[in-house]
Image 1 (cartoon, rainbow, N blue to C red):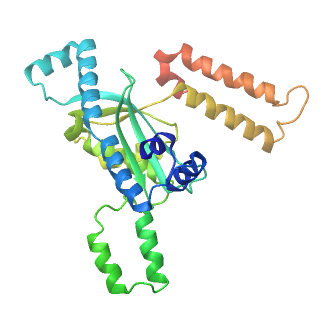
Image 2 (cartoon, rainbow, N blue to C red; image 1 turned 180 degrees about the horizontal axis):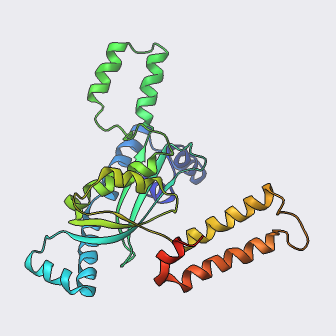
Image 3 (cartoon, rainbow, N blue to C red; image 1 turned 135 degrees about the vertical axis):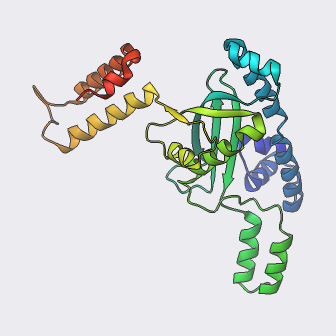
Amino acid sequence: MVLLAHELGLGYAALKKISKVLGIPALHLKTYQRHDKRVTEIERGLESLDRTREQVRQAYADVDPDVAELLREDADAVINISVSFDGTWQKRGFTSHYGIGVCIDILTGLVIDYEILSSYCHACALKGNAKQEQKITEEEYDSWRQTHIDCARNFAGSSKAMEQESAKRMWARSVNLHQVQYTEMLSDGDSAAFREVVALNPYPGHEVVKLECINHAHKRMGTALRKLSSQGKLGGKGVGKLTAKKCKTLQNYYRGAILNNQEQADVMRNLR
């Protein structure tokens, strides 16, 4: 039942409701927490990431003779790879207690690393409330804190900052964990995570380069045109007006121009 709850993204309260509907006894909270901890440990096992690492390294060796030669000389040699990075949250609006960052290898499409962040621990919240309501003393609370080694909270910043923090953690451990350097990063056009990674300088002597996603550029152009239409005199109906249809047309022209001139990216950047 606990594994089922994990697969469905449900917690203890939802599991109790399911048990009630099925007419079976619900697990006690402590029993649930014990099984939940075990399931989490299994799901977070690095065995699958180890297999991914080997597949990714082999894929780069298959397409790049230099990488193949390097790995023949040293099977644990560090290689450079390109990854796509993005973050998401349990709920929208930058109010979530839980977030996750994911690195996907561009060549193979495999998830090579992920980082789950939590700014909330239910056990800490319960004990904190008990202390506030004077059900336990300050000394009892401090004593409990010293023995509370399995705290679910691993991040103290804002929800918005979770994406940047997860990127920093994954870039910082990529060499030790996978023997790879994420030297090319494909992410949102306005990604603050990229700036944080650059400031971290995880690979001294090796620059982390940002790759631009055409789809994101296409989306940002549409957003900018619609904003311009709603704020200025260009908006409205009629000849010469920046209508919704015209915004869509210009947005598609912009995407087409990028696709058809990929070899002249530097020239396009310098156009005024």
